[in-house]
Every structure is written in C-alpha cells, then in structure tokens.
Length: 114
Ligand code: 5GP
Ligand code: ZN
Image 1: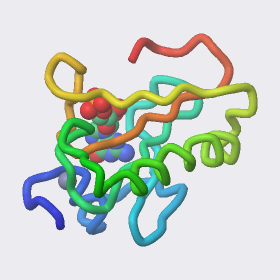
Image 2 (image 1 turned 90 degrees about the horizontal axis):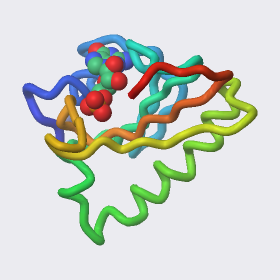
Image 3 (image 1 turned 90 degrees about the vertical axis):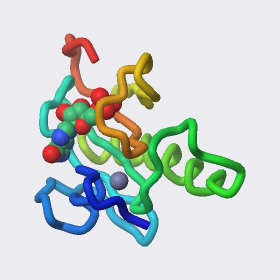
C-alpha cells in the first residue's frame, strides 16, 4: 500500500506535515511546499503508485476521481479564472517525487515556470 522511503507516503501517513485541502478514503490533496503559482495544489492517491506510467485499467476510476477533483479544489482555493493540471511523469517528464501526483496551478498570472 505505502512505500517506506517515499515522501508522499509519509505525508499520507502523517509522518510529514502538510497543508491538507481535501481527503477521502482514496485521495489526499495538499498545498505544494514551493508554489509555482498563487494556487498550487497536489492531488495524490493514498496508495503508492510510482507514476502515471504504472497505472492500469484497475486505476481508471481513481484517476478519474483525481482529475474531477481538480476543478473543484482549484475553485475552492481561489483559482476562479482557470487552472492548469500537470502530471510530470518519469525522468524526462521532470518528475522529482516518485509517487503519482497531479499538480493543480491557478490564480492570477504571471506564474513561475514549472
Ligand atoms: P514533481 O517535480 O515531482 O512533479 O513535483 C513534486 C512537487 O512536490 C514539487 O512541486 C515540490 O515543490 C513538492 N514537494 C516536495 N516536497 C514536498 C513536501 O515535503 N511537502 C509538500 N507539500 N510539497 C512538496
Ligand atoms: Zn508513495
């Protein structure tokens, strides 16, 4: 379920604090520690998956849930004029934390480069 040495698994377990904005049995959403935009949230599955590349048909509903949360959480966080969803995947995708996460970025521009 969780991976010992994974930063986001530690956040799920509460071993590392985070500013949570949403939680249910499958998913956790919290503020990015180094925001690249006025609104910068991360939506993660509670179960450990390395990246989007390791997701399969079984995870279709989970992925759908995460994506559908993006507009809701973006709006609640104050991004009322649009937002961007980013899923960095693998080395060349610029993925640093190897636990699947959806970036939700919004708020008035300009933003930092992601
Ligand atoms: P990646 O580059 O893997 O797509 O994104 C990882 C994101 O996780 C980065 O935007 C980074 O700021 C964020 N991050 C890294 N460590 C922590 C942490 O301990 N807490 C929170 N809230 N965000 C983190
Ligand atoms: Zn993990």
